[in-house]
Length: 119
Image (cartoon, rainbow, N blue to C red):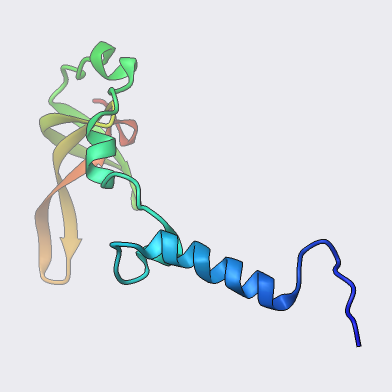
């Protein structure tokens, strides 16, 4: 009984070609590297080479100390303690009063600039 080729070769030819390609890829590699191929440079190295957005240089922190914090309980008075720039945006460290089970307390937290407005 003869079989006609469909242009891809026989099953034996395809298995042999697959094994040869796998042997070439796995030469000197271990684990699943042969299956997945070479991995790119470590992500930390890739991200380190990325230039910050131009807006990060143009931003200047606002100069107010008393502010309004628009949080989950509505607008609250807060005290702005410091600024830091992250990813082209400013984040403010604030102190805000919070009602706790045994009374009022002061909570410090970092929030995005968009959650703050001048008092």
